[in-house]
Length: 295
Length: 246
Image 1 (cartoon, rainbow over the protein chains, first blue to last red):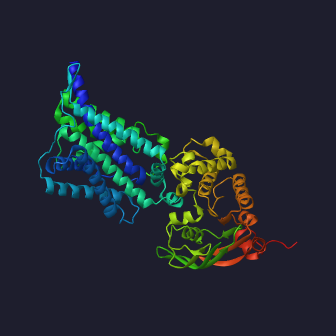
Image 2 (cartoon, rainbow over the protein chains, first blue to last red):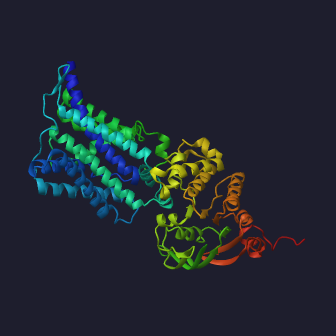
Image 3 (cartoon, helix red, strand yellow):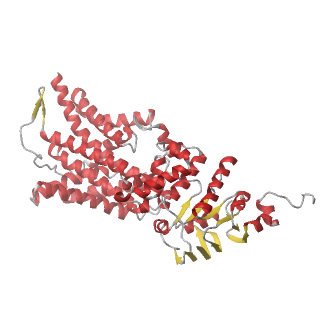
């Protein structure tokens, strides 16, 4: 009984880690622009598929493929910002969010064009026997996913709270006019936030693909789950998205295991609705903080 | 120090600033007074680069700055404290001040910036007490001090203040104004000040301009303007026609 529970817990932690990364991606862009980037899930897909392309088709060594994939994803983020967000002279956030939805559809189309509809996978980062804890089996890749997520979280936290660039990015989200007046090049900050969040998404994609496979249309579901994670923790709160991501991942895998696997995707949505109804600031977001925000 | 020549600004389709010329001399406080919607804020935003002028020249220390981006203008030494303060509400007081030094900050040489932060805390001791608090939780007067402190962190030579006293209790507004005087007297800062409360602005100013529907209609030394009948009637709340002569 306990073994089964443990098994579900580990699989929940694995998907949860990716949701956390997607949630962090949402937060990065939200924190510097107040935009919700609905193409966030596509960056994860790009991570998985590009990694497959570089390592299996071009046959580059693992590390080089990973670096190239992250850079390529960053470049896609850059293109997205320069060609769709920047030319919009409007400050209407809703409009910008709709543009990101359009971009996500476009990206999915292009990915299908290049990779087709098949799921892709490649070898895990390290070969070896799965670990056995109290009868539950953990693949080594699971540990990679969780470890990489943890590293990303720590680095992003340090970036936003300790560096001038990170603080400048937060400043842009709060008040664009004031950010300009203290000498911040707002347009560049927005660009950097898209690059960064694309890279974080891609890292998640690279890590998860050996476990859960990757296909061109996985993006929207990942985006929804990641968005739930971000909302659950309180939009813009780094720690919140992490805890939200893991919580949703674990609840999802428990639901799939104990109730029915068809119910799995409903969990995140139910949680999101509950949060929006009863605690819109999120579990960890302070109400005072959310009142000071634009939305 | 700052010379505007025939500046025209359109705000959408509205001709907000018409043919404005003005001159701010080094070490002076220059007051720009006028009613709501006269174009004061638009004019200031044009100087700091938030809005583009459609024609005319803006010369700062002899070089043309119209058409430059705000971040370039901050680097030249012009800091603008906008109307409504515009502090970074969800960031701490400390981070707000730190961001003021954005254009000159470098990680390796953070010494001078830290020293300047201490100067700000010495000037506004209340901010030192609130260091770690979110800026949005400060009172109006404290937020105004923070906004001024943040602007000073950019090491400006010209400080542009838009309505620093508006919405504050009279004693707090007075305190803010005394700080502005001290910035001129002790630090040699040049100040361009917009204020609806014409009396308190002209009291601390050296010279002033009166702007009405986008046009400068009067200019002179602050004393002259304070004694001017039209100014008194329109902006100082005195009705000379019904006042009995002494």
